[in-house]
Length: 344
Ligand code: PEP
Ligand code: MN
Image (cartoon, rainbow, N blue to C red; front, side):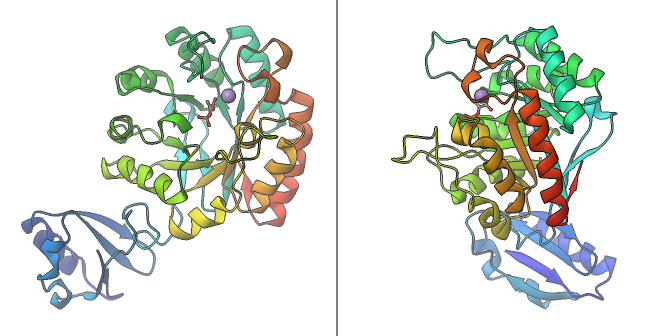
């Protein structure tokens, strides 16, 4: 349920309303825009049905939120959320959403300091603003490379921060959250864990942004409900990520649902980015799909890059080489200008 205040409502009226909401044992979320203040009510809405909150001074309207997700809904928060991230909390600010686009790039997995530094320098020179790299890898086979663990996290942080780039890395288990939080500027929740609700709650307790990937069999509604888990714990910095879903098509790794971008943006204020690397699994398709993502209004793109894909320890077959990545970045900047967005 949302309570819309009148444009001329006073701070005292807002205070009185909040006091009443608390008295009813409900939680609230305040959204103060330039024109309007909206109070979102979280909790058992039936408690409110009989409460004549609409009659309180300063209240214009009391509306039910018809979507199953509340905090993630655009009704609750009409303006775009802009997620900000800085390397180590002090570097230059990178923004996603509200007209800002960010390129997240790097290898699938952190494999060593030298190779990561080479990749990071290349992607940064081409215009990437956030460095990615997995230290805990969700592999289909238990015999495949599982990631370097904590030494990998340290390498990622050191390499990224030396270049002033915030770093994002996957966390797979609630027990890993404190460790990953020490090194990463942004958590990644992988497609396989989109509905690991304990993990979502755990990163929701943190105050670092969360890159939430769409599960391979999840609807856009499911994705937004997973975001709701993080938001409901108090972490408002969630970035959605479309990375393709499983279908009968077997010539691509997954099937990229480009409509998820405007679809999610219509229903939610959260930024959404696209990962054409995991969506297609094919370097010959990634540039076109990255360009389509920016044209479709994505707030960012996520691409895997490796200097020697033939030697990569995971996902080498889908990695772009730095010159391919550089050419892609130049075309993305041109498209961003056409759609009126700014690259970080
Ligand atoms: C990844 O980003 O390396 C990854 C494993 O992605 P996804 O969870 O989308 O499969
Ligand atoms: Mn990968």
